[in-house]
Image 1 (cartoon, protein in one colour):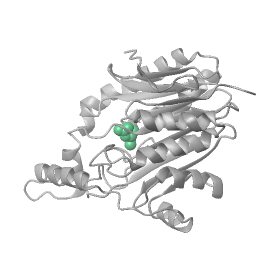
Image 2 (image 1 turned 90 degrees about the vertical axis):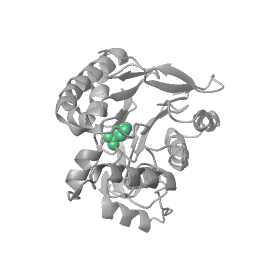
Image 3 (image 1 turned 180 degrees about the vertical axis):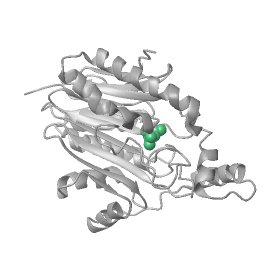
Image 4 (image 1 turned 135 degrees about the vertical axis):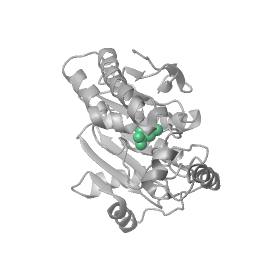
Length: 311
Ligand code: ASP
């Protein structure tokens, strides 16, 4: 099968990273290799504060990273959660898929695996992220309450983070691959895992029906299995547009409840990127003003488009 390569990504990713991926696709690179290439570039970008190096830390000042990788041809997947001290969580996630009969490794086990495969170590806390964390702790650590639960509940009232890396790639052979990488919500409780490494919640990919990836408040994407649900609706014959609107409306309904009851009330949105099996793309969000990028083989550079907000 010959099909046109395409890259769908979140708007916060630099154009050059996407354009570089498209150059590789035009030369015949696989969707998997290009998804990893783009994700690694974003993980190295110190200006990107919700992914890889420079990501906002948890409430203890530790950068805990989540990432997942899914191959649409085989439905194989790999993921890591709460991984500390490695430069490229996305590459570790892909290797989980390739080398182990497992899908998700967390914390110490993920770090052990990363060490065993020779993944590059790095102190992922940038001076800027550390300064922001110190300032936030100074703001919220009043009196004697210094336990992590109290601090987290106070710190989360202010929303930080939201640039989770989402990339969905289709190559010239028609294979699709999706990659997601994030440092998660800033000032999270240690060990908190968002939607990004949860296959079906923040990431799902199936060549036959399409792929989806999420950004925003992971807790609600987990609760409705957002990415898998979008793909399953397309499997049942729904159009990309109808599936995206339906999932965004469900996310919005849960966010309304969270806004009223959670300290994360300012983390008040989710956006889902969707590609269908024919290579059509779209994005759907629970609030207006969110965008995404797409580049086809004919485009000299990525094009930014506004996500649909159906609520
Ligand atoms: N979805 C990510 C998480 O919940 C964070 C984000 O996109 O802001 O961990």
